[in-house]
Amino acid sequence: MRLTRTLGLTLAATVVVAMAACSGGDKKDTGTTPKTVDKVNYATGFGFFGREAYVYTAIEKGYFAEAGIEVSVKGGNGTGDTLKNVSGGQIDFAPVDGTGYLLQVGGGQVKGVTAVAAIHQRSLAGIMTLDDRGITSPKDLEGKTVGDPTGSTIGLMFPMYAQLAGIDAAKVKFVNIPAQQLPAQLAAGSVNTIGQFVVGKPTIEKAAPGKKAVVLQYSDYLTDLYGNMLVTTEKMAKEKPDLVKRFSAALLKGLAYSIDHPDEAAQFLKKNQPTQDAQVAAGELQLMGAYVRGGSGPVGALDSQRVARCIAILHGANMIPSGLTPEKVVSFDLTPKA
Image 1 (cartoon, rainbow, N blue to C red):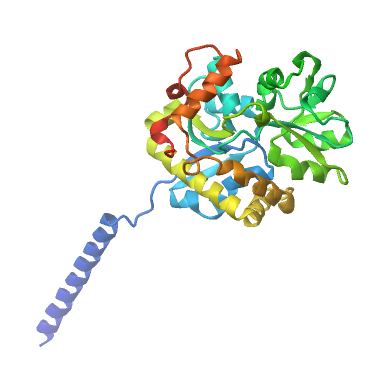
Image 2 (image 1 turned 90 degrees about the horizontal axis):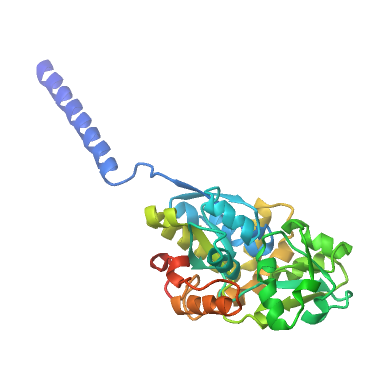
């Protein structure tokens, strides 16, 4: 009897060990072990204003985590500076103004960069002032100063805007001011106007209480141009297309959610950037909605024929030489389809 009991216990223990081994093998085979997380560096387009909240929405809503991506966010300082950082490998992904991007690539200042999505279907670029400055039309800019970071798309596009709007560009002086300081410098009267995306109106009016912002939109004269485009390196697009698609999809999901839920997205921004005003941020996001969904395709879509028209506009204005094609600036196999 004792021998039988001992044999029974030994057999039971053997079965338990075997089951445990099988169980461990099953866990490994079904993919329950931790997956590798891709870490990427992202720069905003222009500081940490409300219009940039969508990256934090994608983080806080878990869209990047679901895609197996961990994102480190840095404040950008305009198209020219950001493109240099992407091209140099310091930044993996960033939104830059589409026109400024075409000017930089077409002019040969930047290489090794490609666009993979459109953040805005229409250009947000413009010049902003206050209602007490006596500036109500483009012609009024002559003899005035414009605060704007060196290399910003506002400055890059200004000669073309001036040509179409009938301004003598030589009579307008641009003053280098970092992105985050622009609203305060305008309010203080250090400059007459500032380069600013049109959705920045709530931010400017907060900085100058009791005054109304006056907006001169580039899109009044420069039609058919995209706003911000999401860019990465050609190396990343070629060697890690799956990562590019996962990142782009998560970011665009955050973008769509932000313009549909501006108040919540503004809170996500304030959580990560406590100095930002959530109410002002929500106002920017509300204004941005029409620009994000201004096209015929899904959020983020880039159309090759429209990109070709954008290139033609810049070439026709003698802003870039001939030879630039849509395929040289956009990886259409990685973009949402228009």
